[in-house]
Picture (tube, one colour):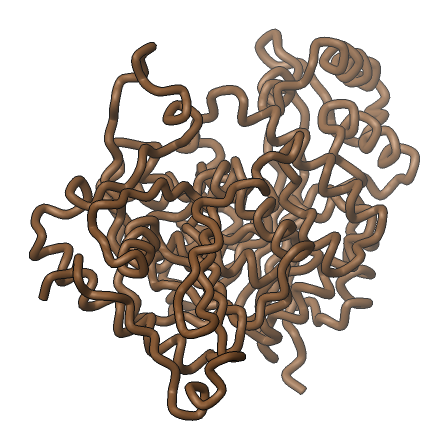
Length: 501
């Protein structure tokens, strides 16, 4: 079969054909967001998760679609980047994502071309040069096979969804192939960029290409925070928005510096928590506030059947996905990451056997909202493991401690006492099984450097710590050791169960 003479046959059924003047279908072809293999040459896998830029542009696209389009059906190809892009769109649009595993995909070949003065200005404005099919496929026969696998699936979708606006999330090669088939030519190249929209419409018995590679959602003056879609969809409270924006600001600053994702002290603390948790193998687990993904990965290595990590920071998720893809552990295949706020997670009720929430509640003005959401996604009889900053029992010392924490980390809201945490858990309706207090010696200067605290904040925190050397004003047991200021960082470990009935 010669693909240049093969039209994309999307013939309506007999019932639709009888009303040909009014018969129509709209296809919005959305290119999946940028994946890590597009940015990191050392990653061998092609089916990666999204980069920070990919998540951010997906957010912008989701908001644009919510404001400008009425989507009836949302369908995704099976490639991980397509699924993550579609899931984020569905979360914002309030649409379920249909995963069509028969849709073929092929990662485009990135041409690493030197930028030069001679390069056309229009091409420098695009991430990718146009998709010439002879650059993407080794031979005409290979392209023909790809098209033969793709077109019948598209035709089936159209027959099933006739009369609707159907959004398909695909890779750039699939979109370019569909457009080429509609044009009935292989000699026309298309520039298909990440998260771009191309639209084709069947009306009055023929296809019309409305637009190709639409990217106006990327023209916003600033990238929309990861939580904007939740704000639109759920009318989040002002305190939630404040919490999330502060966390994003702090961790975007931290990630502008080099971070060691294999920090040994961090690994030791995570291992200490998992030893307390003592989780059974074969469970489906959720890591809320996954950060760089270390805890998520270690849970999988310890025998969880599946672990999903969620975080609101696109940059953190990029680091977590890099950690997953660069891991030699077979358990990495059981790990995935999603962009979501802990106050509203994109999972069905009773989805997980275990949920771990580490160092997250102290960032929230309404920690009970996070705990209620954790309870919602837990199965009856499921386990929540909490690890949180512990404040002094004395309210004056606790207030001083929180002042110090907030000077170092503007996203910090409050560390609570043991009794306060117990009350929060009990009010949520979870039953506390075990608890423990972990004490770690912390070097003050290293602690300040972890969040890239500015010089003024460092100075204030240092003065407050030194002032408490004699009186233990913040309940942190500040002391001098080998010429350095050190203190006790206390974490409350707590294990609670969702009642079975």
